Length: 159
Image (cartoon, one colour):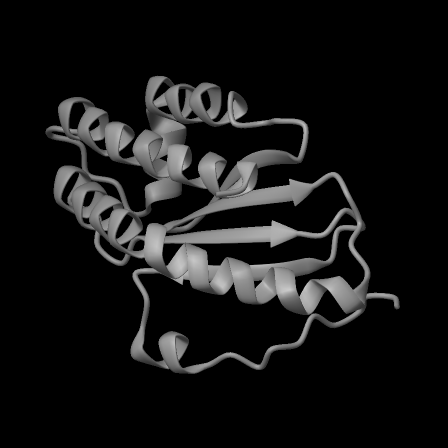
């Protein structure tokens, strides 16, 4: 298992822990979106940011953003891979992440929604090539359309 995959698994563990913390700090608050909730709860956001900052490694920098009810976890690879290699990398991410991330990410969404009372929460995981172009992404919880769709391309890459 690659360092990037291990980093994302660690992110799942962090999100599960934060979901529990949100339940403890969110009682009695009425918030429209998860982003607003986190902005109004600096300690919960700080916990997420500090935990994910520890996921940066020699291969990848990991960052988090929040938009509405979406948590966006981005892994920026430090190496720029050529198009000829990207097809294999993309297949590897699709196969390995489906096995390792789907269940924990969907569980994190359920826990966050339950603990905050906010519905429609999603977690987007993005892996970018060293040049900033997206290699792979997935939104959790998965929809049946997402599970069926895979075009196999990695656009904008050089040979």
